[in-house]
Length: 273
Image (tube, rainbow, N blue to C red; front, side):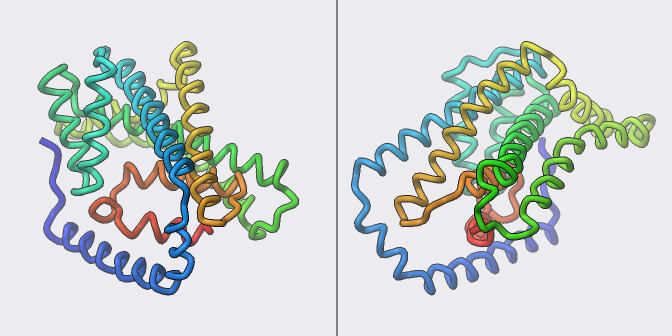
């Protein structure tokens, strides 16, 4: 059974939700004139945006399924996994981590996939996707879009974030091998296994090629969705900014600070803009 947060931690999250909602409502109220533009959106661009979003979900779903298969040595049928992936996303948006708990229990009961195998797969997917998005954003800021008036510290911040994300699983594995062995309890053994499997994900050449292809597809579609969505609202979005926002979206889809991360994502996007 997945661990449940304590009462104090749960109250802190609900308090964060309340603060985020209040701030979001304040932002929306002061920008209500801009929101009026949404009433004039044409049906065709909206339909195209929905189609791109479905393609993005398919690419993300298949990438996680491929990693899960490599980590667990179990083959989950694409359609069945797609259903679990989408339902899990909906549940996560409603109640914190309920979607991941649903996938954990379904995979364990139906396919015999261990909890730590799913956790390592989810961590590996997030690591690969966020790292790729930040890497592309860093390159764009210093090359193609170097003439844009970005904040002075944006390029350096992106490079530092990229390096930090790149070395994070390796540092976690080193620390895990140093401090976790010999500790009582299955959770420490499982954590050490998670760190090791995340690093091993990119060492398999055939798996790496498949992941690279799916990551490029997901990145291209995700950036297109963001650029098109902001364009429909009258905002011209630089590709570097879209890549940075995509990385934030990938992180917030996994790390739930409030129920459904409601308010957190909106404030994060507004801050980046």
